[in-house]
Image 1 (spheres, rainbow, N blue to C red):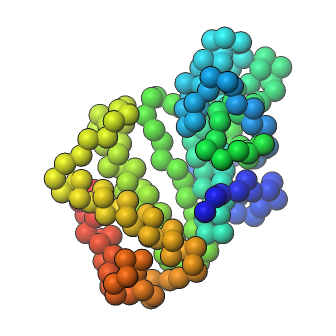
Image 2: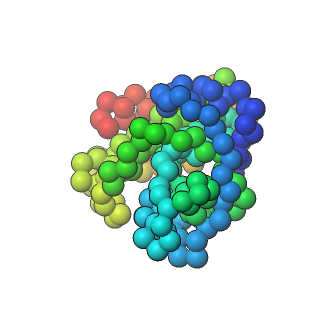
Image 3: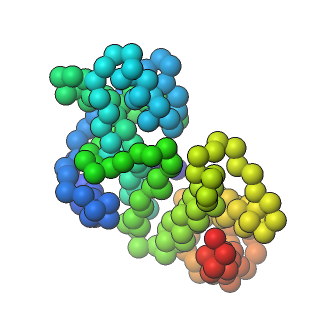
Length: 207
């Protein structure tokens, strides 16, 4: 499901700001990708923009929303010397603007920062999807992997990662169909809670 940019009046945004742990107000920032900017590489993109044109970096969170969750993604935008903010990083799907929350205490040290996600649906499958995303992030950013582009896994860790990837896709499918834990698992087996749902505690104890 393609996320949308929430409105400034969205009541779920206050929950997200509280989860982030900052005191700030969301604003819209226009998206105008630089010709040489890369998708998902906001920090290098902004650094290159500053090198070529001046200005400075503003760190914060871009906010996305689906019918099931609201999500904050650690992000950087570029500011001109006149304090005009622009998001110069292209998106996988085009957006004319983003909802951005500045984080004045935010620091980027070269490592990825996990998204902050809140279940707004009341469906506990969303909690499982959030747990799956968090575990995938932990695996993919464990130790030196946090600074590497190529992911190399083996043994049990690889098997857990593969199942979690399957669950991420499967849970997203179930949610798009309005299903719950008490209905058939995405794999076609037993009810989800008796099938792939039982894998989560096992994975959480090993990730």
